[in-house]
Length: 149
Image (cartoon, rainbow, N blue to C red):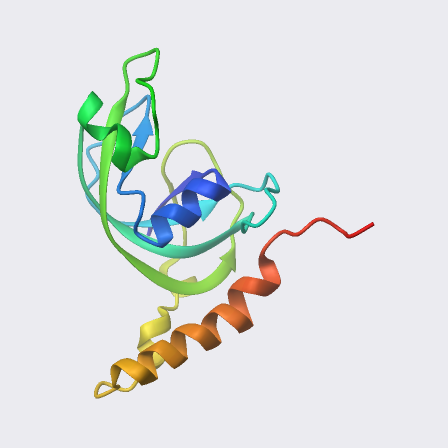
């Protein structure tokens, strides 16, 4: 699967669906499923060095003021940039990924979708329970919290 490295905070916002535009200085012809990898720089309260979500890259267009809010930005970039339009974030079991510049490939066999473990006829309550278990078992343990003094 094609993958991209993003700062841990932005990675989290993409995974939760609140950031639907990624601002990049370069464009790509690639469209489709994209593995979102959190960069390795530790940020308090965020996951670093892991991929834990996929997203669909719908389009790449010139970045305009209309993209600012969806990108989590307040000012236009000083250089020409592109808006990567993202949709449909989907949780995966976290995998340790060494980030790289640009798009790179991650072996598909490493990617396991969380919802694959849910029964087809699962109720909303059962899906909520699965999401809570996933968060407690997989996300909280890899969230960076500085050592308490």
